[in-house]
Length: 384
Figure 1: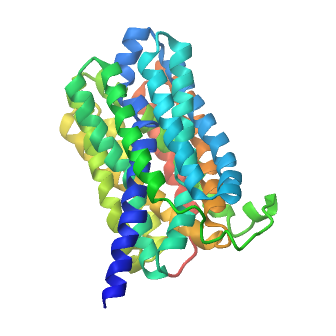
Figure 2: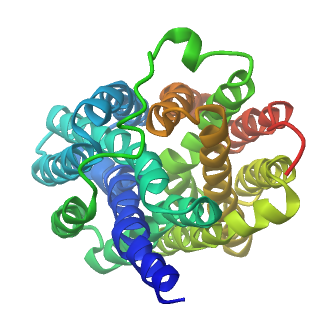
């Protein structure tokens, strides 16, 4: 009985905690911190909504490039190198944002920080496969995926405390990234479980009848969800909600994402298909609720809870789904899913930023909800 307990503790310390912390830094801080602090950055740097949307899309472009690079980096050198590169890019990018004196340097920092998320997530697919027994992988993966929620939940209070001093908030983010990165690199294995299972990665391996629905759902969810991450705080501010309240709502969204750590068990109980469809439906409902009740704080809080929990659940479901579709090389398969998600997230903020001045946030958020709802057509196959 001692050996399983030791292995369980080792799995938590080597895999789950560092993995969740890295996702918290690279997604919750480096990637989504931009949307949280956007209104004050816009004011000081005199940045229009169009420009803000383009910068957000630019971060997703760098994320997309990183998704391609991480496949080679993980296969060639192992997951530890990819995790270390992710930590370095997150720290560097956020430092550039903190010292930005104009839109150009801000955009550069946001793009560098955005690339960190693309390098951080896929290696943990290999790490989970290498370090944990099959029966514990679903719960471990859903917990790591919920790391985004930890990051957003931490970022919100930091932004409230620093107030309009958004540069100080970014410097705190940098300090957190350095500490977490050091821990994660120390804990990451040098090689993944698939190192001795070489496969020929080709276009037909990534895009095939089995992967088609998975990749299509990722594009659609990316289209809709990116509008929330980029513009929810600004939508609340324009509707009359105070800056402090909007940031607290953003933190509530992150805290709600932590519920996704339970989805591994829920998916085992309901089946991946049913769990996925419920999560996507709630994600669309959250965007509709934000669009229709933007000026009413109680409704916005409910929307934030729904969005945070359902978005993290959808990401966890896609990760579990990907591990079955791309079982031969989990990290490469997850990179493909993230690439599909990124295609949607590149388009979403740019289009939303261009349209918001013409039709307003309620219509833009309704359109985002419709994109997510279309993901119901692309669900995992039946069966638990």
